[in-house]
Every structure is written in C-alpha cells, then in structure tokens.
Length: 101
Image (tube, rainbow, N blue to C red; front, side, top):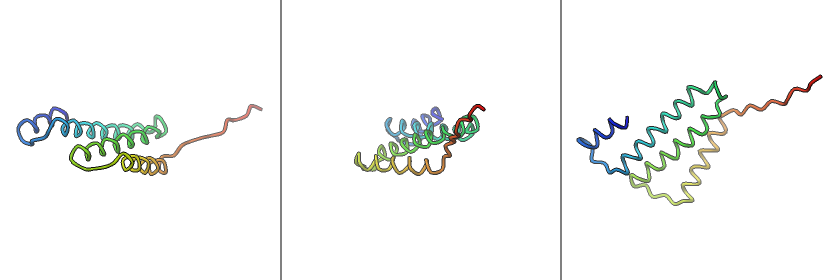
C-alpha cells in the first residue's frame, strides 16, 4: 500500500509528505481493524476496541493534515465519544470463579 501511494504521489497526485504519512497511517489503522475483527475469536473481541480507537485517531490526524481545524478539547471529545460508542458494542466477558466443592 505504501509503495503504491508513493508512486501515485510521485507521478500523479501532488501530496505533501505529511499528507502521505497521514494516509499511510489511516491505511495501517484500517488493516489493524480488519485484523482485530478477523482474529476476534482468539481474544474474545477485546482487540477490536483498541483497533477502532486507533483508526479514529488516525482519521482525526488525516482530517487535521488536510485542513480541518479542531481544538484539543474537540479532539478529546470526539475520541471520548468514539470510545463510548465502541464500548457499547464490544462485549466484555466476565465470569465468576467457580468455587471448589
């Protein structure tokens, strides 16, 4: 993915190195979400929450690099909202210990 993006920016799309880096970051985060989703059976789905939060952070970075103006408070509010939303859909399994008889 990175090599294809570098080829495009070299010959077709005029992007700065910051923009290219941000696009690479969001692509890597998207692959992380996909990997967490595919392997959710191995860890009970707990890695999906972290992967989605990482993707949201990368998406905010891309938006900032391409000109969106957000304050620190706005960024924190968006991340808190995403964390709350993700936690509603990721099931945390907690089982009581069985007692020895």
